[in-house]
Length: 204
Image 1 (cartoon, rainbow, N blue to C red):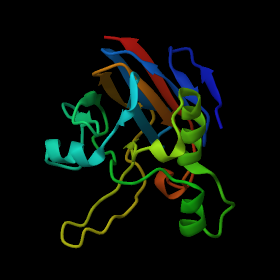
Image 2: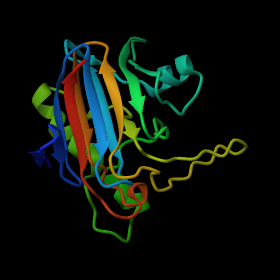
Image 3: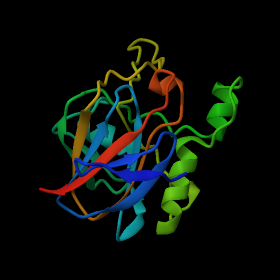
């Protein structure tokens, strides 16, 4: 459930349907890169000094006044503190509503396919070394996930990401963080083909 390799450009590639976790210091830049296009990446973040503080989509929506987030927006915690700021975004379409895909997602949404532990299982595996339990995994920020919403009915539709090879979204850490990143496992989210994701951490 964790399979990464170093790339020549200084990024780290996460194999399809796996995930990883790492420490991100305040002020560092995290780039999430779609190397092939049409691939989603779930990102979870926690205060490195108090793992009870984690991402909150509800508070983020409250303070942003919108559900589609891009350059200039911040992702807030359950304590109303900014955890991550979006500093560059070549895509402009991401999701912060859907929960990470899981074995139950495959049981209920993909009954004709072989069950998979999904992003939830990969996040749980990657975060356990930081003492973070499954019940403390929030709704992640789903980079590149394309979820149009009907303004009248509220119906959600999962469509293929609009990313092309090399597209990326970059965040600045607003405090010391524990971050987990996946290469999403759900076929519908990734145009039917699961592919790798890359990430890069740099000092700003």
